[in-house]
Length: 227
Image (cartoon, rainbow, N blue to C red):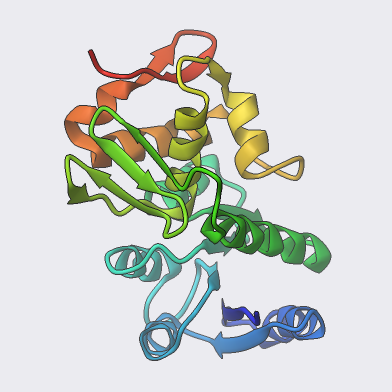
């Protein structure tokens, strides 16, 4: 299966370098050099992953991410030339799945994109048990859909991964380091606040069922069935 990558970067040289790396790996690549064109291309094509620069003309990366998250949970990797933890947290709060700071090594960016795509593909395969269900939260693993009390719950890729990881280890305390390794692996750049931000977004979407995700002080998080 050929995946389609949308690269949104206003610096032509950087965009061309990224494009060449992904083309050599057999991906289909779409390009945009501003936020408005990115939205048009996204709306007119089936896109499997977006690499999104923050500082864009016409419509910045924050706004593009926010608009896409209203209609899609496609994986998004955000790029920035600014080393600012608050910027990183804002990106995650808007629904980005990963965050890469410039200058970056193209093979590392490619590896992180592959990790996101492979994770989605693996989850889409048929499993011996194809669902998780607890306390009104139901996860259909083949379709990667989540419902809460029968109502659709639209999660980002990262929120979905955190929820299923916690549910698969119900009652077990998982440290922030374990969650980071599960979601991003060894090449993760950031701190514990990244996980906290995703957990907060996930809880907001789960509503009353957010009580299932329990914070264990100085330890991490665990999933507990509501009594």
